[in-house]
Image 1 (cartoon, rainbow, N blue to C red):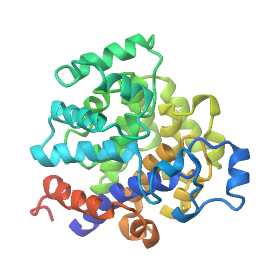
Image 2: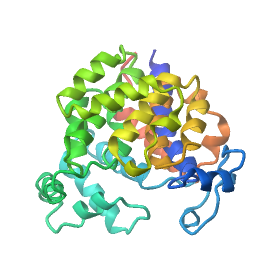
Image 3: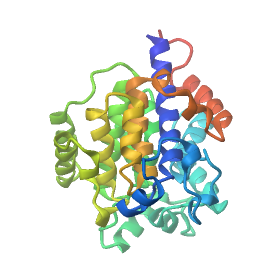
Length: 314
């Protein structure tokens, strides 16, 4: 039992990093771009087209999605527990390093002067300034690790989302994905679709439409909406689509990455779920070995699993 849990725990974190790294290859591309640059689709890191946007990263590197997920992991390892203010501090320190690819909403929040002292108030203020419209996927893209916490997953997912993304659509997305990952990793009964719809209703009824579409659609491309690139509910629907429809980790990874759109984030979240479902052993070796910072990720996985699973759980 414990071995299975560790394999799924590791699969979740590796899945996130792999989806992010391969998804960078198609991020922001239209169908026309994809047909031109990847006539037979993309399957390997080595195929990532080196345009101005993409060549800022080494091939096999992940982007801000996994960077921010690691900020959460490292704060939890440091505290041997969850301190929302320390997580906010880690986000701020990361942003001060002028990272590539930081999202617009995240940037606005983290750059406010009193962010570290008052992260929730600052985040709420930025949401209010957007006339309560901003519901980007920057909270959801890093939430996979919260599903690995041994307890209080819902409260942690809500608060860790709200330190940058206050909109209830963002918060609800994070809770659904974190709860799903938690159940898959720890061998509990995963939430059914009616349970997810019920969870969604306590945040924003609009979430329900995207859950239903994820279940109904056979082709992930039909979930893409160019007008909503970066919208938290599109990313949620893609992750749930992968959970319900993909028969293996690789099948889900390639389907999501080859759908384009906000592919690095969509694949990061979808593949965190798939890694939690199928385990790390199901991931083809080339995707693990091709990660530039694999050693750093492995160290984090080991340390975090000691905090979350410990040595005494059989």
